[in-house]
Every structure is written in structure tokens, then in C-alpha cells.
Length: 212
Image 1: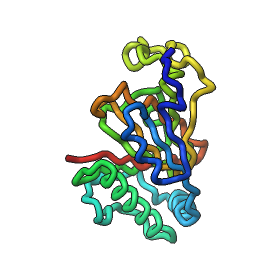
Image 2: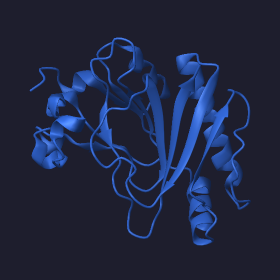
Image 3: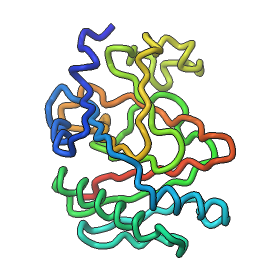
Image 4: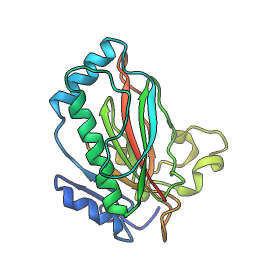
């Protein structure tokens, strides 16, 4: 088992400034807890009930500009738009990138149901509706069983998960920063997966990546 404890590689906080800890060499994941926005929650429910959520959108934006997403014109739309714009600016400010790749995913099934590490430098995730991203601390994982090394076996049988009780799920609206395999000096990146959406409810996930 990895000798580094979960407490040494993960930072969970109610303080926005704590996200800066992602630049510490030993940190692989930072989470900023924030309360759900009632306007956004209501908007997504109304849009889903009206069949207006769509399947998701992708854009490349410049920080400070409004992300041009085809969101249904319903009460709460401006709140969601403003939050996405703010998160894009936050991500760009943290990394110093000139542009941000934006994905707003509307999912009826898990996007990445097996534990994995993203092939990116640093990714920001925020789940607005449905279960949040799950992660497995390095101290509870056998990285040699990631990907093809699992030989097609489910994570629960491959030997990847050393301690299932260590699996943690991000709460709704939390801002999650995850180092990927391409982060300079990365020890492997954050191990995470997408949980299944709740029955009858779409999972709405925002993902941001730096564009250089």
C-alpha cells in the first residue's frame, strides 16, 4: 500500500482560497465545498421536466467572456450562466491559461464508471445535479491495476481498490480540482470515476480544462 496517507494528498475545505493547495507537490485533489444554488437547482429541474436540457455542449472560451451555451430560457438560466462564467475565470486564474475548454455534460449513465486518471494537467469538475464525482485516495489504491492492467476485471475484483471504505463522493455544487497524468512532476494523478445517475434524473456535470 502507498505509504502516503489520504490526508497528505487530499484537501477538503469550505474556503475558496484552499484550492491553491493544488500546487503543493504532494496534493493530487482539492475540493471546495459550497452550498447548492436554489435558482440553479430549480432551473435544471424545470428544464429537465420540459425536455429542454439537451445532451450537453462544448465550447472554448476566453476568461472574462460569457460562455455561449444554448441554455433554455427559463427562470434560473442567468444564475447557471453566471456560475459557469465564474468557474471558467477561476480555473484560468489558477492556472494562468489564456483560454478554457468547457464541457457541460447531461448524462443518463456513468461517463467513466471505472476508476481512472485523466490524461490532462489539471481538470475542474462541478456536478450541478445528480451524484458527484467519486475518488479513491492513493493510500487506498494499487495504481498498478489501473486501465489495461486490470485485464478487464471490474475494479472491485482487480485488486485496484485496497480499501473500499476510503472511496469519497463530492457533494453537489462542490468545486473539484484534480491533477491528471500530465501535470508536471505528478506522482500519478487523482484516481476518480463517475457514479451512475439517480433513477429518472439526469446527471449534469461541468468539466473545465486549460487551453494553451
